[in-house]
Amino acid sequence: MNPAPLEERSLYTYREYARLPEGAPYQLIGGKLVMTPSPSPYHQRVSKRLEFFLYDFVEKQHHLGEIFDAPIDVYFEETEVYQPDIIFISQERQNIIGEQKIEGAPDLIIEVLSPSTAYYDLKHKMRVYARHGVKEYWIVDPLERGIEVFENKNGEFFLFSQATNRGEVVSKLLTGFRVMVEDIF
Image (cartoon, rainbow, N blue to C red; front, side):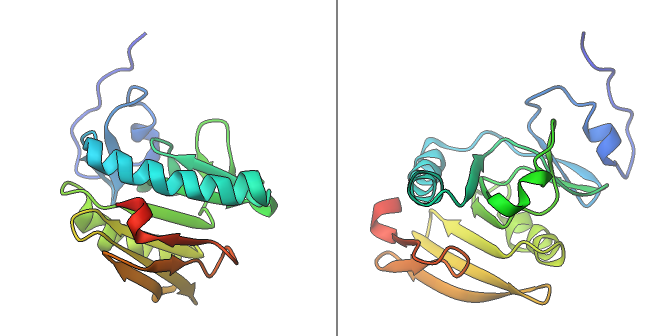
């Protein structure tokens, strides 16, 4: 059975968003349904490589929690439901993993920039992530071949580690987790 089509409106909430067909290419950003087209193969390669290193460290080696990748809904508030590229949820916070969505801020979010979502990832979503208590936020830029790691201090993100083209980035949240940029791009 197909869900009923959404009526046109200027502000949507999670209730309307949840009526979209499964897999619909949208995120709910600032109450707007923002179409997010499928990522490019290069974007997916970058995301896959980073997720592999993170999964190996978090789940296989240290059993720190769970890694998820897009598309998975992360509910922050009625008008803010995103599908970050990669998220980490610690063992202590597994209770936010709901039947249909992640119900609260993951401990770590990684966004791989793409032309259609870069503005949101760098501005609006970054502010929402900080305000809701995401402890660490990684911005991965495939065009510049760079990674920036931000630490949340009192509801604001501050740059903690970065590398472009060559070098290593480290996590503040996941002690001992480090990635060589050359291994990702």
